[in-house]
Structures are given as structure tokens and as C-alpha cells.
Length: 418
Image (cartoon, rainbow, N blue to C red):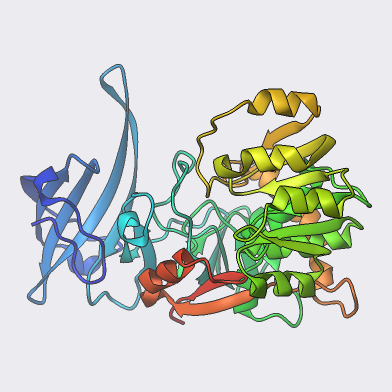
């Protein structure tokens, strides 16, 4: 009874019970003014509205994420999501997650069709977005169940309050709190950026979240200076490939870790001064050797727990260790604080997604002014988004499975229907 059709994810049937039926009102989905069964999922705290159309049972899912305090319901928020094997053309294909953690199967990924919100002040269409993460840490409250933190496309509609910076049809790329892996998404005007001349929509889709993250980590959090040694873990990830180029552009010296010789060679082409294969050598010892015992001034770390001791060992006096991911886990066993204290080191955590829109707009403005022009320039300071593979959105599971192999060099991009 509670199995969503088509490519959509499945729920545990034992967690569902039928609680009644009602007629759906005509509105944005005029074909759905039919009698529907209502099912409540205790596991997901969702009410699921099933209806029949042309002999097929389809599904409208009204997401009601309930918050409780002291045993009483504190509030709710809702969004209509339409899922089905043959949706009307006007609906918005998107990648939905059931909220699991870990592997692609555990994430509960699948296609759904949903109605985007009314424009806040601006809505952009024909998005191209990259796959999301594994869910090792919780998303911010109110985050969309539609994956995707960045996208590119064309402006489709202008909402109230727009300042006249954009017009319908403009090519743009956007930083998002979620919802980017869909054909349409609502974007605050201040989080849009123009697509640099000479770049395609697919290339532009690989820029916003990864490059803004790297820019923030280096300049706003890490305070990188010319001549600094910067150790970049996962050097051939989306953030890593951006950080290599931005470090070099700042006059600092990028060092990277990666898991294959092919990746290290690619990092060198992007501007890395040295690379260390963490599968074959102790990167902390190799880093100390390269820096003649001084250590690195800044570490950009998306690995976390499993690297803590080696990070501290190769950190310079008064160095900064910026943690922005937990690929290697969150647990730490050992005298981290005493070793960090001995070096007068700073451990700083940073997540871009949980920042408020005011901060993000400031970051977007600074990036647009200082960095974006370099994607169109010729010469040694030209910047380049690195794309590894492009998948159609219908192959979202395959994209995540490929990402799990850790073979990609640069971004994996999803292309949505035009």
C-alpha cells in the first residue's frame, strides 16, 4: 500500500496505516480532483495521498515534518510532492531522498515530481546539479528533501522584490540550501551568479557550492597568505580541485593528498606543488619533509576523525586546521587537544550550507567580484571547473554508485530534461 511507484524510493510498509479518505481540491494539479486514500507514515511522519488516474495508482505526498516539544506538536511545514511513472509535462522532475545515511541504497534516492514554491524573489529553471552527499551530518532545519546544493540554468520567472539585476532567459548559476537536482528551483536573487563567458551550463553547474566552499575556507576561515603551505585533503574532489587553483592564485603553496598516482598527476596539472598518496605513504611525514620540518600553515580537511593525528603532526606552529567534512568519521581517540595545544594550533569547523542567506549573499558577492572573472581570462591565472562525468538525472543511483568508488577526478554532474 505504501510503495511509491516508478523510480521513487520505497517505505517500510509496516510503518504505515490508512487513516481515512478525502477529496482533493482543484488547484495547481487540476487533474487530481478525485477521491483519495490517506495513509499516515509514523516512521516518516508524512501523510500520503493516493489517487487513481487513467487506471494507475499515483501518489501525492504532502510532507509534514512535525516538531515536538514537551510531548506537544510545536509546528509544521509542508510541501506538495507529486510522484508517478507518467507525470504531466508541467511538473518538475527532481531527485528525492528518504533521509537515510550512507550508501546510495540507504539514502533512498529516486525520481519524484514536485511543485516548486512560488518565487521568493526569483525562480530559475532548467537546472543542472551535482549529486549530494552521504548524510554523515544532519542538514539544517527546513532543508528540502530534494537533493542538490548548486545548479545552473536560465531564469524562468521573476518574483516580487527583484532589483532588476536579472531578466527572464538570463543564464545563471546558483548556490542553494537544497532542491537543486530538479528542473525548476526557487532561488533568492542574491545567491545567483552570471555564468562566465565561454563556459557551458554543465561546466557552470560544477562551480557554485564547490568553489564558494573553497573560497570561504581559504580566505574567510583559513586566512591564507602568500607563501603559506596549504595541505588539501581529497585534492581531486570538487572542492579540492577548486582549492588547488585558488591557493595558487593567492600566492600560497598547495599540497594535496589523493588515493592514486593518476589523481596526483592531475593535481600537479592544476597547480599542486606536491602530492602524497595516502594509500602508500604517511602524508604527515611526507609533508614535513617537503616543508623541511616546518609543517603546513593551513589544512583543509573533509576527512575528519581518521586523519586527526597525522594532521596535528604536520601542522605548523600557530597553524590552522579547518574541518569541513567527516568522510573518515567523527570519532577521535587520543590526546588531540594536548597535541594541538602544544603547537598553539587552531581547529576551526565550517559548514557553508548551514550559514544564513545574508552571509551567503556576502560570499557570493565577494566571489563574483574577485574570482569569477578569472574563469574567462586567458593566462596562468585562468580558473577551470573540473568535470569527471555527466549523468542524466534518471541515472541518479548510478551516479552515486560511481561516486562511492572514489575514482572521480572533479565533479559528477547531473543533467535534467530540457
